[in-house]
Amino acid sequence: MLATNPTPKPQHSKNVMKLEDLQKFCGTDETRAALMRPFSIGDRTFATDGCLIVWSNRIPEVEESIEVPHGKVNAIVESWVDGPWLDLPKEIPAHETSVTCGDCDGIGPCENCDSTGVVEAKAKGVKMGNKILSNKYLLRIAHLPNIKLAANSTRPLEACPIKFDGGFGALMPMREN
Ligand SMILES: [Zn+2]
Image (cartoon, rainbow, N blue to C red; front, top):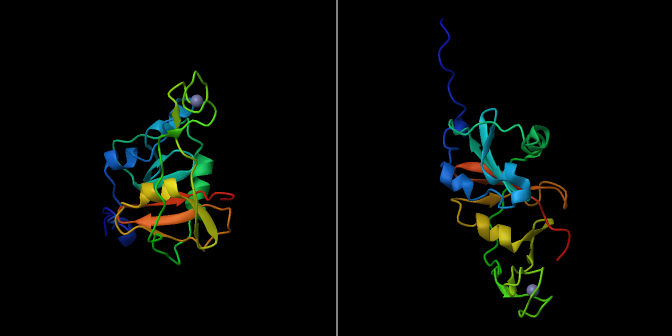
């Protein structure tokens, strides 16, 4: 029999994200420019800011990046564990993006807040499974359809596997509250 296109793996068929949805998980730190846009490795396309990584099936137009450490990314994918899955906590504390800068009490001039008088609040830890996860990141993933976390499947300070309709990911836990 002649070779034909291989049948896609069933678990892959729905793991597709739009580029603009993946882009939301990219970093904004210009000193880590390689993380400011999605990148592909093999048959997957990734977005990460260094704390949260999300991936789906390869988006054809997203190219591989030589600036991204492939070994580190592949290690995260390989250590990803398929459950047991937990739902997000019912209540996640709000993340405040503009609280008064403690260095200058909001009156500047100040390097800490670029003299804007406000800074982003520190993330609050949310206990989930054997981990403490950042409210900021839990809120960022909360809208993903059918989001689940395997918060008991790896050691407390190891990345927490996540899955949702469209893709997979891993979230680094916090050390303490
Ligand atoms: Zn300040």
